[in-house]
Amino acid sequence: MARKTPEELRSHRWYGVADLRSFGHRSRTKQMGYAQQDWQGKPVIGILNTWSDLNPCHQHFRIRAEEVKRGVWQAGGFPLEIPALALPENYMKPTTMLYRNLLAMEVEEIARSMPFDGLVLMGGCDKTTPAMVMGALSMDLPCIFMPAGPMLRGFWNGHTLGSGSDSWKFWDELRAGNITENDWQGVEDGIARSWGTCMTMGTASTMTSATEALGLALPGSSSIPAADSNHARMATACGRRIVEMVWDDMKPTAFLTQASFDNAVKVAMAIGGSTNSIVHLIAMARRIGVGLDLDRFDALSRATPLLANIRPSGSTYLMEDFYYAGGLRALMERLGDLLDRSAMTVSGKTLGEGIAGAKVLNDDVIRPLDSPLKPEGGLSVLRGNLCPDGAVIKHSAADPRLLQHTGPAVVFEDYNDMSRRLDDPDLEVTPDSVLVLRNAGPIGGPGMPEWGMLPLPKKILKQGVRDMVRISDARMSGTSYGTCVLHVAPESAVGGPLALVRSGDLITLDVAARRLTLEVSEAELATRRAAWTAPAPHYVRGFGRLHAREVTQANEGCDYRVLEGTAATAEPEIH
Ligand code: FES
Ligand code: MG
Image 1 (cartoon, rainbow, N blue to C red):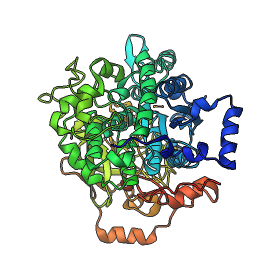
Image 2: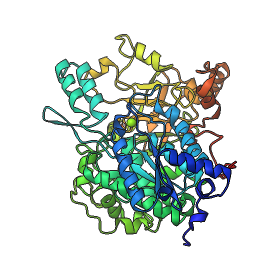
Image 3: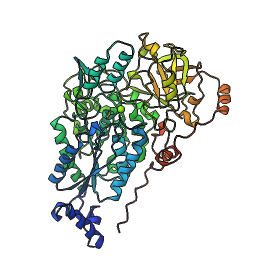
Image 4: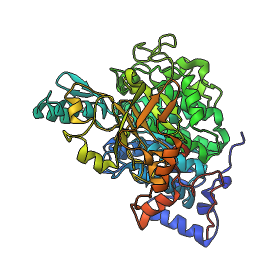
């Protein structure tokens, strides 16, 4: 590959030209204390930092940004740190998913409008990863993703605690009267002990792992715990590497292929990854015209064994254990020829070269191919008259006895209706009932909140039951578990069949056959459809209105129509 000359750098148009505009750019850079030697003839690297005081998962990003800069300086680049919207999973309401595409847009427009030759994308908390990758793929500058890394294991009273999963588990135990308020306080103190992302195999670690497998993060980078000093050195390595990528003009579209995305999907399956990865990877692929749909997910899931024994699909281990067991490189090496090892990565080496020789150090955490946790990946795509455009279930985190089940529906109109009636002692519900939540999709939620793991009614919990079939057009957190059918498409708010279900209707779930069936005649459904009216919109102005107008359904990735596709991002005129 021919190396770029300094005059061929994109930033040259801002800094290197002998005109009044460039004079302005240079004098204003000098205003910040930089001298010409700092930038002249060097790649300008934008370090997009999603740090905020309200994002505990990215709390170390102020320090990490300095470490990335150190790498950029070492390699002869000029680093500039730019803040980008933080999407703190826990705090943003109604859901960070409402803002994923806003961050994607921000990343693309920051990159487009400013003098950057290459980008380091600092993210990790759930939606920040797909958002930053989506924007960067559309902009198509050389870029490297720096994963935030998982936090340390949680700990309370002799128990290891996992993000998300254990909050729900102990909350159910509290409601069932099995633990005290004091115990619950101890869980609160011990469940999040360091900076970094959730340390179960939730959406964060699923997406950072998938992004590494895709080829956009350095080999091994996604598994390093945030608090480990190796994480700091990895940040510096990202800074060094991006400078080389600029000189080599290594843009994402130059090396990402269908095989790269298949690798990402297979890794998401082999790690028992979050259902959210389906929506995100589809949206990412569509940004560069790679064909990835639900059927491809299901096919790749069936062909990929689940090897990572990490909660919530596994029973015991967390991301810290995964790192000590060899991490993602070792897992990918173990997948062998199931991955396309010739796929190119940001390291400048193929995927195969980047993982060669990586060893699994604990066969119980990363299982051998001949004794996987499950012979197939953890996710299945369902079809049927209740979900004409598909639905998703993470069967690896479900009670096996419910994977083939028929039961009467108990329908909740929306989240508030569910909250009001769920614990009502008069609610007609048995452990065989199928809980249905509607108006929780991309438009109905809005933003398709993670409401898909519907809580169980108190009276069912008191019977000792801990799982039921639940169906919604919502998503569910990657750290959730249970027999939850998600992402029903089309969603109820646009008149999908979910809108037509009535309490008492029989619903059949058959995961082996990949079917979800509402046992109601087509004639009866037609009558109900004719009587259906759309719910009132959530927003009459502002970003929410834009969202409702532009967002696609779950099976299409929930991107905005105006952002999808492969048309080149127009370079700005520089006057
Ligand atoms: Fe940030 Fe889970 S809340 S990764
Ligand atoms: Mg999450």
